[in-house]
Length: 252
Ligand code: CIR
Image 1 (cartoon, helix red, strand yellow):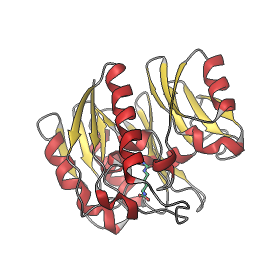
Image 2 (spheres, helix red, strand yellow; image 1 turned 45 degrees about the vertical axis):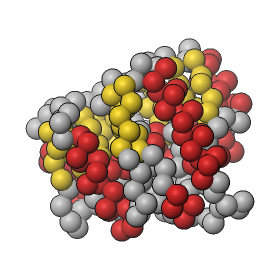
Image 3 (cartoon, helix red, strand yellow; image 1 turned 180 degrees about the vertical axis):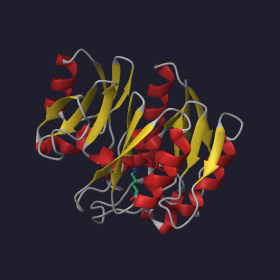
Image 4 (cartoon, protein in one colour; image 1 turned 45 degrees about the horizontal axis):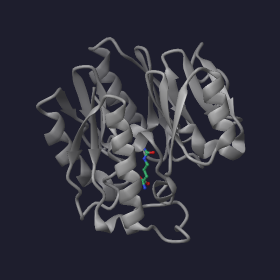
């Protein structure tokens, strides 16, 4: 397994966030937390490929939003935030030797944080960042590869689909209580965590191990009772920019 990550620029202090960070982002602490994240990926067997930081793009560490990879094919997205659209070139360049890439054309927009894959289905949040044309383009490319794309309407206050849920395996989804209708993921089993821990719903499961945000004990209990080994990571500086665990890598 390959994991693409992207380094944190000095400009990360001015990354997008719904609520201004208070206290402000500590870029050095963010880098230390990011280093622990990449080390955890490597320990789980990933070969980590690091795309260099880009000072012109404060949010570039959130590389997940820039591409959706499915087997041998990748859709290079057109992120919904205009300030992030220039992030994709370096990611497309890094992915080109690994998979066949397809560029999403304007005016379609889509953020990878809206995409959750279970088996051969990708659920895509229709958020402020991902429009119907983005969903259609993804469907157009991936239907040729045996993948079904399902559009999931999201309430306005949810930035991305995976802000409130994450794949655990092909049959199970971790989801914050009350965030999504029970039938959102077809017949998948939902493992619910308390609404007050909803930030922790974004976990990164690799086999039976799960990278989870540190400081959310109820979520850890749910995961461990379901048979997963939890690896808590400090994510305070990613959270200040509305980021979490899946956002910082693309698994190939
Ligand atoms: C943004 O607003 O685009 C970034 N500050 C956070 C993106 C988080 N990405 C993700 O959840 N996939």
